[in-house]
Image 1 (cartoon, rainbow, N blue to C red):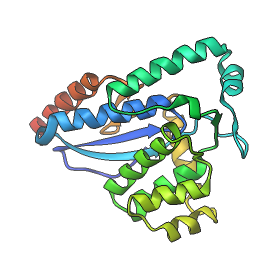
Image 2: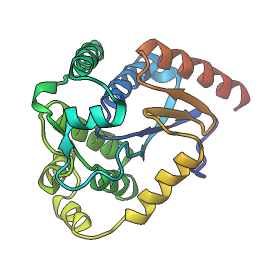
Image 3: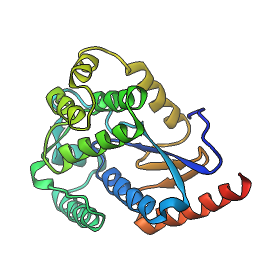
Image 4: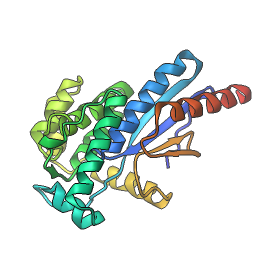
Amino acid sequence: MTTSVTPASTLRIDFVSDISCPWCAIGLSALEQAVARVGKDVKVDLHFQPFELNPQMPAGGQDITEHLTQKYGSTPEQQKQIRDTIRERGADVGFTFRMEGRDRIYNTFDAHRLLHWAEVEGTADQQHALKKALLTAYFTEGQSPESHDVLVAAAGKVGLSAERAKAILASEEYALEVRHAEQQYLNAGIHSVPAVIIDNKHLISGGQPVEVFEQALRQLGAKNALTA
């Protein structure tokens, strides 16, 4: 886990997630709304951490119906019901899923490398914006998060250097750092996402409603204020 220190009055949030995880898009949108609700009452230091649902996914990806059937044993009918639920939950928190245009699932390792780069060389706001851009590119626009063109375009869209993004993707830069971070979270017992870790010790799992995140932020923020 991270070893960086933030002030007692600030809640550090590590949002562990994958670009190919619809519940991560829902969870992030809900968390954002919760942060907006608490406003100035609670300061939040948000970081995005890597997790791959399918680290062995080959280049070119896999048909998503085939993948879900192999991985979970679900039928196409069950998958349709889940897609409908995801679409509704997304709409509730302002995230648009266009599931019909998303017929494949892809390897997301390079996307995580760019997100790590955004944190190291960019700003927290740029990393956050890049995460949102990548989730939107895949789930709303039906673009491949494996495509370097898609990744570079997303980086440029949020004010990061497109040329630097191209150079990173053409190399193995940040690969070791991402692998190390992924393994740290696996070793810590994180095996499903989203996993929202507050101050390195409080875990909220899954795409929870806004109210769940808001309550946690208020309670933990108040606790930090008392001990500051």
